[in-house]
Length: 134
Image (tube, rainbow, N blue to C red; front, side, top):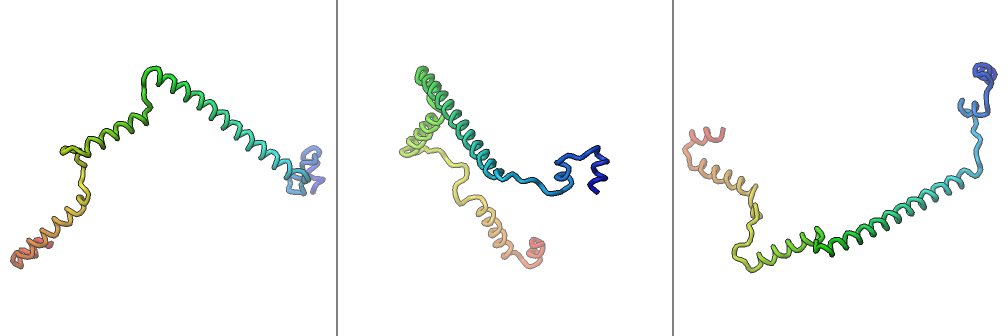
């Protein structure tokens, strides 16, 4: 069979056996080389992350310089101050901001409406109760 394959392919190479599913030549240092490669990849990734963290820190320093120069506040600081002002105003104020839906409202109102309807139906005469129950 091998002879026929050699002739068909015009002369086989060493890799021909591997392609046909034969025995592979195993490198005794393959595991060690793979481990070194993985370690090198991890090290490169750490160096890349450190580089970008350093660049971002430099950018933030420049941004902070611009903020200081022009008196601009960070977005988080503005939001925190706005929230604190809102809370301070609502503590002693009689006209605190109203919530959209008070707690406990919503589904309970629908159940209440159903129970009122059931109560009214109970007091109707028999034939009318049958009409409303349908």
